Image (cartoon, rainbow, N blue to C red; front, side, top):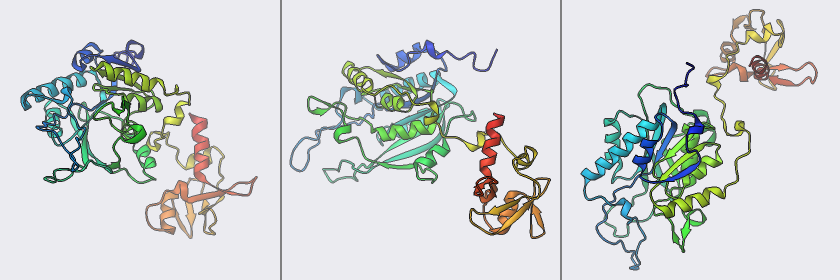
Length: 369
């Protein structure tokens, strides 16, 4: 049996569809180990006791929906355990889960996650740049929500597109505090002039976490689909999605919203971020073996620098009587972390232009793949 032959085929799944129904029941009807990622935005159990008024006595349109109300913590915990158990069943062993919440529920959710055997990878703080103020002035303004990222099984391989996160963050490693506004203005879905869903999440939030923890063609499941933000972003990014939602009005809104997004026709490579660690390793000496460079040829330190080293037949460089690898000699010339592939340049015989030796590595890598 080939690897992954035991997994369900994508054609057996309700891909890119919203299923109306109870999420636990629907997930238990799906095949085991069939999705790559779960994003869950469950009821927060806000425990609101009275109406919230602004200083001008106008009513704040907060979260007062029936689906967010539970009689006590015990029932909320049982509800949480049920849907998380169902999520774990449908997740692949290499899959992971994101769940978002506020201080009202996220700590209870985190404890139940751990009780069920999930392994927490990160907590991420979504810092709201436009939070609703605390109108009563009796507490701090609630200016953030917490996301927990957990894998199904500790120690299994899981998807984390580290280089994509660096690229989104101007080349810097992505931190666990994410600043972005709440969903307002034209991005907020309206129904009869009022917001259609009280806790609609901003698309940039889903964009970031789907880029971080899925690959093109992966299947993302959202058991509390609401008005379909997860599906909309997944469609933009070339991922498959499955949405589950109890409320018929939300289902209709989500379907209409996602249907308005043009079908993605870009090549898959548009949505991928290459990971150098997964590329075929090419030693510098292979450039000599394949006649892309010659023993005795000069390499220049920098595109316009005068410092040069000579290539030896064994793939080492010689500089002022010292021999070493392209990385060692680069560090000898300029101490500190150095990537020799990007530090050394050769002179192209035809154009007489200097080019990084990494260009030759990529040419050889493509010829071998």
